[in-house]
Length: 314
Image (cartoon, rainbow, N blue to C red; front, side, top):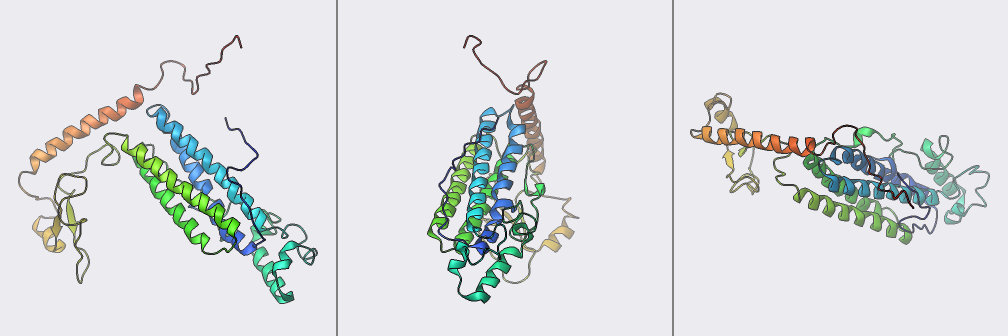
């Protein structure tokens, strides 16, 4: 059950109209890294988490709801930036506040053209924000990622928050309005807060590596193939100990020769059989654990999503 509170979570303000920046800001309204995409991603992820991870369900729904409130902040800011564009813009141009920031007829006509060249600000919406990105491309559900495995979904969310933060950083460079910058800074900072929340939630799930249920095939886990010509770079991604797995990187300097020598990676090092058996054992154990997490949390008989603990005497 959603309950709309009419006051914004953050007091969004705008000092003067700016239709060009309003167009850019649409990226966070209906773009792939925007607030609607984040809200719908966490909202849909929450359903699969409800039974096995009720605490994570609560977190996902809370953050999804906050993202909807951020969508409202972005939409309100866009609307304020378009003050004077609504309605009969050219007929009211001389009286509208937007013209106070322009010098001369040519500049006036140029800004009007830029504001209305995107159809969502003219023909289609009469000056209101639509669910598109800054290029007018409609929002698409393919922007969201929900895989039904919480460890995978949480990693997707960490990446989503990182991208959204970066977009806000870029947007802040395209406006001089101190009030708008203040709003963007708030929204950017909440992306960092959500990043931390998802990191903490992922860390609380044990085990959470590798993503999903099945273990990685030990024959191919630690191989790094040098597949580019020229001077090769070395670092913790291809030398020394692996960051998570208790193995060392196997740097294959000559991938073509290695593939031929192993007959397409079929003939690997001796002694791998023991690791293969351990992997098979871990696959069975984790499969049972993950399956039990879900099946044991599902109710018998009639399913009921909510528990209404209402005192009938009240």
